[in-house]
Length: 180
Image 1: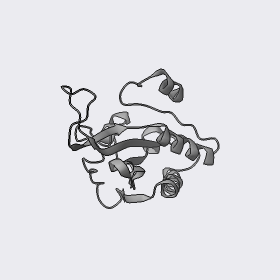
Image 2: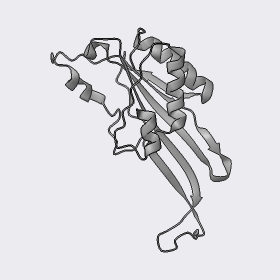
Image 3: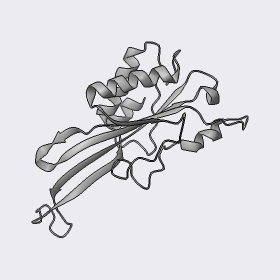
Image 4: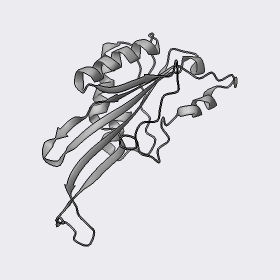
């Protein structure tokens, strides 16, 4: 995200949007202490979070990497479906990349989790539910809901450029349109 505003202003506006839509469960910044790893219930344990993390230092051609200012927030549960005890949650990392890229640039990393308690199914029984429920989770996704949040952030800051990157290939042609 490139704009004439610093990452702190971007974070404040993003924080306001998340607070309005879903509420904020917790938030951290790295000015005093490192930001703790989110729970495995929110971020997949096999996903190195943040995805860029210390890998940002590879962008610094001068090799004088100084840890950039970062904020992280975790939303309250949203998309709640009482009948299946289902909900979604998002974690957003906001990183000041101005020192690395030489211009006012903020990197936003998002990951969403979806949880539900549904009737169990197995490959043996196919579509027929088994007589008990199990927790199901989808971790490490981003949907149109989160893209809309970022697009709304962009609309509040005219002149801001946003570039989307996906850590794994786009799932379908419809999603590819959003990325381009």
